[in-house]
Image (cartoon, rainbow, N blue to C red; front, side, top):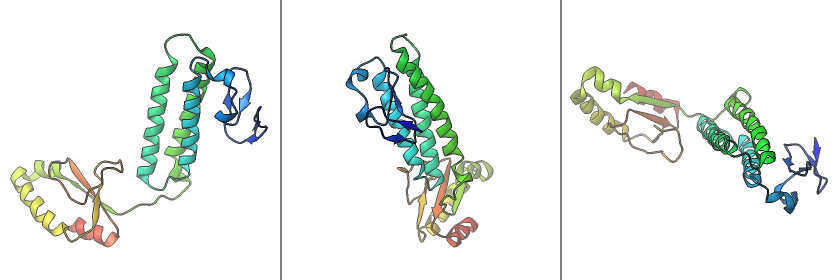
Length: 196
């Protein structure tokens, strides 16, 4: 456990390290004299990103939540890995960023293994692989099957979550996709559609 050099609060998480070799609980406690050093801005942004991720871990409920957070961590890690290579200016904060990249790796592992500790919310789903169907029975027959299936599917409520990011949820199916992943509210609906 650390103590903030400014407000004297006890810290449970990683402190903000500054070039004056002191530790601080938040950006607000960091002295102005340490803020304008080379790469300090990037370092403090990375610290804020890590703290946001630590808070977001508690909100993981579904597999999609986990994947989104993993992607966020990977993106942060990649951008800051690129940031620390190059000129030799700002060595103190570059080193701090490098140390935080290890923290990001630990956070990624924690997020990736989250469902070993908690149960995730899931919904029954049916995956339809249109490309395999076209290959097996031909484009024309697969197209006919698609039209019949689409008509029967109209009486069900579902989300098509073919892509894992949450912005892409539709209540229709599309023969031009590689596959459709249909999520249903009940197992009964999923089983019935699976038989169709």
